[in-house]
Length: 242
Image (cartoon, rainbow, N blue to C red; front, top):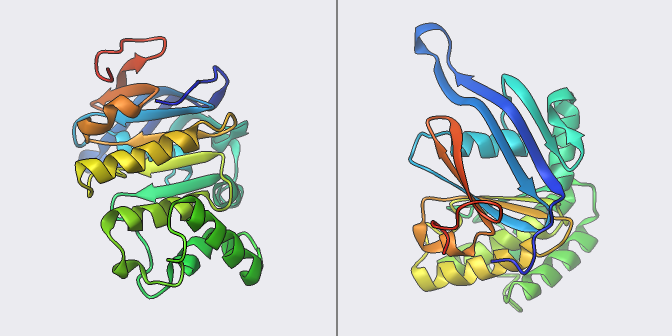
């Protein structure tokens, strides 16, 4: 668990709805969700498949439109922003970590990590210097010019974390970051994410089915049937994370 958790909100969600499809084929995924994430914390969203947790993660990250309600991320009201402004916000302030790493196999590790910086207009030379430094921080010195396919699963996830952090995002979004890893490797990855979450002006949100990592959460939000049902941890019940 992170050393300390701020009470200042990083993400503030109120009455958010999202439905996929129309008419008789309509499937409500989010049914008036209320949700908060704090600065300086690692928060997990858990629940059964189809409960809406990945949809919630996607609307918070600005990668999916929502139908109603309000979402505020570090003072930016996504519900009131035009799509191009949401895209700009996302590329500058959000980092993504995925279960299957989503690294580009034809690029070196340095080139993979450089991508968010290049998207933000940083020169290739500076981007690759920063990428190499970030790989060193992730415990991969000297591996930057290798292709991801030459690395183990845990090493590939470290590359993916470096890519998510290289542009210094305030919000880090993690979708099942340990499910493809063994217990020990997953534990090492969670130690890294806990360290990332200790930054007082950053928030790390993890969607997971992996109950092996619940203990790393500062708080744990439990979803069911498109709604937040319970919050465990600071200010709530600790049963699931102790």
